[in-house]
Length: 198
Image (cartoon, rainbow, N blue to C red; front, side, top):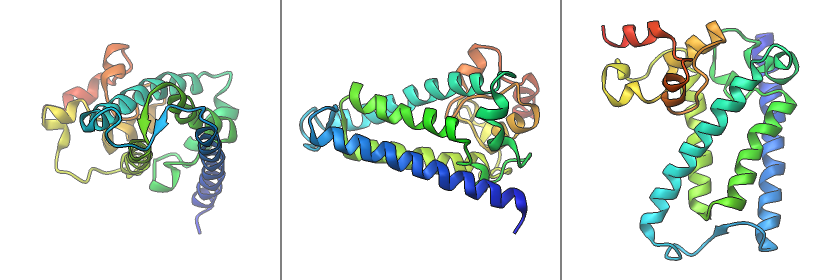
C-alpha cells in the first residue's frame, strides 16, 4: 500500500474517532435535554426539515470557509492542516484525513449547531452523510459529471476540479459546498472562472 494512502487512512480513522466522540456527546446531551434536537416530524412542520437542512449546509460552509482559511495560516498550518495536504493531489483517501486539532475543530460545528438550531435527528444525519459524500466527491481529482461548471448552478457549487486547485495552490478555494465565500472574499482563482466558460 502507498505510504501516503496509509497515512491518510490513519488520519481518517483518527478523525472518525473524534467525530464518534462528538456524536456520543451530542446523544448524551440530547438525553439530558441539553440540545435543540427533536424526533417528532411535525414539531416544526415538514417544510422545516428541508429549510433546516439547507440552513445547516449554509452554516457549515461558512464555518468551514473561515476555519479552513485559518488552517492555512503559516503559523499553524504545519500542526493543524498539513496532514490533509500531505498526499499532494487530493484522493478519496485524503477527504477525511485530518490532524487531531483539525478533526476536533471540524467536529465542533455539529456539536454547536445541535445546541443552537432546532434539528430533527434525520436532518442531522442527512447533513453528516452529505458532508461525507461531498468530501469524497471533491477529492476525486476528476469530475464525475460532464462539465458541471458550465451550468449556472455548477458555478456556485464546489466540484472536484475546484477543490483540486486548492490542493495545488493552497491560497485559493477554501469553501466546502459553495463558491460564495471564495467569490465574495477574493479567494476564487480567476483562471477557474475563465475555464468554466470555455
